Image (cartoon, rainbow over all chains, first blue to last red; front, top):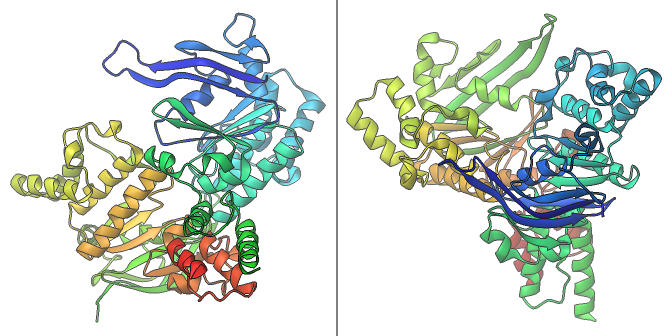
Length: 286
Length: 278
């Protein structure tokens, strides 16, 4: 198993009047190569969870195991771990700080001791994944870029570490629809062709339904549901009770189904919905 | 006939960059918004939506052209207070808009600045918190509210000043589904019940479906404008403008192409269900 979370509990500011139980007794497994979606309303513990996966937060109780090793045992090299399991924060464009795009993207690998030609190769690799031309961008100041370009530079800075897993915490907030679509397509390609494990935290049910192989659903610091999107999004009432919802097309298909039509409801794309409605009609007639 | 509240004539705005070059954000734009209208403003990043929003309450002044709010020109400095009392702004990040240590003090902030009397302030706090559904939280610390509650608090702070118009710049971008619904319900009820004019900037195409009129911005200009049924019926290539048609009208269009009889202008799930099941 790649990542194992065992009975994880995290309490912020314990023993003070401000004590918050952010996570309570959470256990879950993530296999290498999976595309995981993490959903739940604000304050449900999603971000607290993912910050445990690369050792940014230490459990109050419970354990995190990475490839059979306890993360908080003395022999873990945390810096190295954070390049293997890399986290892209929300609004990462605010985290750029170097004079040039090259230096910013090179920061992670340089910290790992990479230099010279290999460093350049990694910067090229990172920029290539986010579709920013090396010659055009590498010597520019990150601060002269547009918001969308800055976000891509931040992503390139993660990829230049050749991570085995990337954790994305609401990466598409306030992107316009086309930029969002491009970004999601790049993540998908990274997962499929780059064989990178992806852990994707989001409020967007439509997007995650199409992308994730497995979902973890959080409410009030507990893991309340886990499974494939097709299973999870059948539980409309449960999801609405914890402040979430289901994709609009799944909702449509479920409503048609409730009117007595024989129709699949595990539908997340317009193309599939169209095909299934046509199929159901033909069969209904024949 | 409804009166014109926002009147923009040939408005142009440039930003001056570090290297002294100028970047045109809004180009020769004209628009009239009627009192009580609900406008959704959509467009890709960098199309000029937020600049337009800031021009509406005189945070920015046009390089060329003229904007009048309820007859007051934004260019005239003495008019700016009158304009800002009429046009309230709500921004994307709820955490950047909170100034006080309790919910009611936060609502009071703007009123105190306007020099409103204490008894009147108290009355308006009660009224505003009621309208956004936060009465029970009057004594609470704002930072302990959820994202949706914080945005509703920001709206309460603005409506306490009794504006004629609300300009909201991606008010739901950072919220979870429940928070989004709370904020959208609040904005719509302000519009319907109080006849407050709304200019709502969003990247969520579904939110634009609920508007009276959708304005599509592209490179600082109005690329398209009309009722949601017209904007999202497939006749405009929204993808080319950095946008997309929401799933329900897109599916309706695709089913029509397959030969199903579905009227144009379907935007809503329940409407599509009833056509498919009739």
